[in-house]
Length: 152
Image 1 (spheres, rainbow, N blue to C red):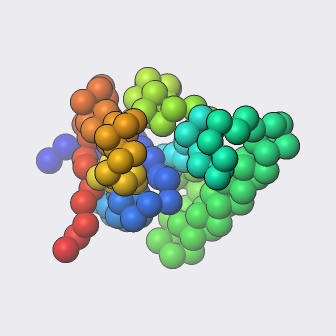
Image 2 (image 1 turned 90 degrees about the horizontal axis):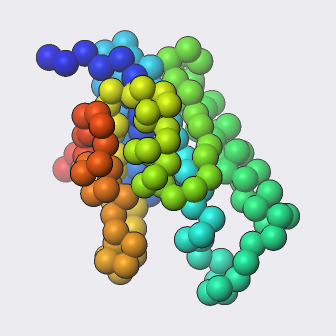
């Protein structure tokens, strides 16, 4: 059995990401591994109800604060619900294209030896136009990748 030391799980609020997070927690506990939970804000693809709308500094700040609040609550949940201590995991917020941030920036910087990612967070049309982040990560990552699917 491979003994993973540092696991990365990108999250986006989707059902697939929740499944991936649960599997990542289980695998991190079994391997006594460190877990990095990553949320990537892709400002260029945000649906703000007005195509072509440009975000100003205040809107970016509000989005950042909203995501920081979400990650703080997630941090508390990981400690309480899953009995993880602060040395076992870390939550991160980054800006950029999720594909690039996960594979080319974050994983090399933190030397993760396993990425666990949900099968998809996008609908069919979004995957068709922009491509699946999960498919890109599986194809381009320089470490092992586990594609988490529903447990049914």
